[in-house]
Length: 95
Image 1: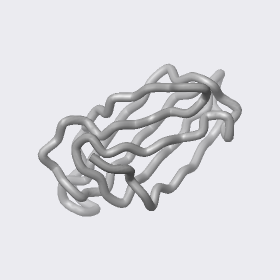
Image 2: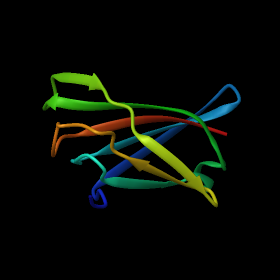
Image 3: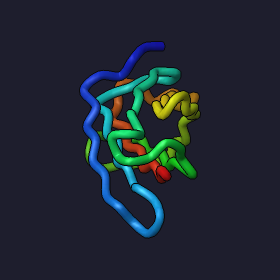
């Protein structure tokens, strides 16, 4: 269990919420990364979708993380997966 580094962020406003895209270069089960929701004008999340590239750049499967929000910081924990050291992508719906 560790902290994921080399994380990229992007966001766009949609109808009533902010969609935040998070891409990590690698990660293993129980690793974490954080998102400062206030950076995107949000304080809570209403949903998250997670994906892992099981084969770099070609095979992508859904993989749900666990999450928590404390004082406006979202912590994303990689779901229980045997896929190690692979790119993970998350789409966060924040309000």
